[in-house]
Amino acid sequence: MRIFTVVAVVLAVLTFGYAAYFGVAWYSASHSSESQFAATRDDALRSGQVGIANFLTLDYKKVDEDLQRWLNSSTGELRAEIDKDKDSRKKQLVDAKSVTTSKVLDSAITELDDRAGSASMIAVVESTVTPADGKQVTKINRYLTKLTRTEDGWKLSQLGPLRAGV
Amino acid sequence: MPPSRRRPIPTPPTGGRPKVAGLHRRASDAAAAPEVVEEEQEELKAPTAVEWTPPATKESTEEFAEKKARFAADAEKTESEAPSALAGQPGWMLPAALLLVAVLLGGLGTFFLVKSRAVSYDAALVDAAATSAVNGQVREAVEKSFSYNFADVESTEKAARELLTGKALCQYNAVFGPVKEVAPQQKLVVTVRVVSSAVSSLKGDHATVLVFADQVTTRTTDNQSGGGTAMLRVSAVDTGGRWKIDNMEMFGATAEQTQQLQTC
Image (tube, rainbow over all chains, first blue to last red; front, side, top):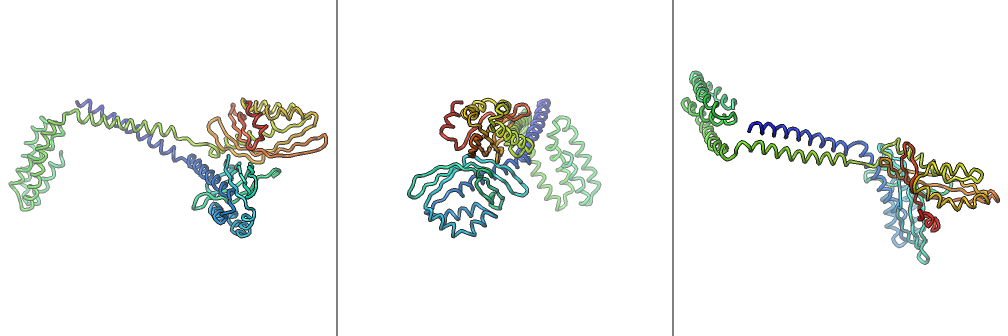
């Protein structure tokens, strides 16, 4: 009987070592700096996609709501710009009397500085513009945006179309 | 268990009777000795606990009486448990329990092993060197194979053959075929420049790159030029150190272009 006890003890010790080793391996693999950097990149990308879709979607019937959403998804330079000429922008949008909806078809991060909390992203965006009294038009455009990390996650700090000949 | 046997030894001196303590030790040791031989080591606890209590009674001070009562109660408990433990839990209980633990730990370890192997992340930007290699080579491939000079057809075709592979070659021919037909007559010069590009996915020897390109077409017969923009999602595959394009998807392609690409 004693021999069984000894064998069982040895087995238990060995399996404990086995479990402990791979437990640590799993932990370190999923907490490596590489996978954290990848997670940061995905986070920035997701925020950028949502931010761009937010910025390129507007409805002249609810301009206030749209402007507020723009402010919420932007920071720094871009936010200051919107905030500065909020009223003239609002008038412009109301006068245009059009509804624009956009979705990001594809996007990718071009640069990411985890420490500085800044990133650049390019995106292909499909926008559908529906004028109040006209035929709707669908266009595909390309955009370049800069993202900055804030306390509330990544936000857009610059946004502009990439026109031909840039 | 040695500690439990030794504990009462210092207590008698506080009672002020060193002689009795000496006696008591000898008595208990002598009594315990035969028991040890018979029983297994684990069972040593029970007999010693029983053995030392009666002598303690002899020298009982007021404090000691209380202690004695407590110890006696403990001893009774262990006494009543010990035999039933022996009878009800045979010797295989311990190895069986340990084996069960071993099996559970083995399962847990295997779970961790599978999990640690399954940890994977997209290496785009994470692996800076590979990312910039993919990016640079895809840019070069797009620029070289889509730029065209009627005076030097050979270099474009050579670039396409070298930098594209598989399905992308067919797609290239579908898109570029019509251009090639009119090129010599119109003396076309097509310049493609990648404005911006980024690796959106990099896994092993497969990568996806988003490419924004500008195209300038000049008809040298009458110096008319036109331009356009293109957005491509390009798949690239690593062929022994060189990333080659193996698939292209065009965003905002005209119906005609889409039709041409569908033949591939």
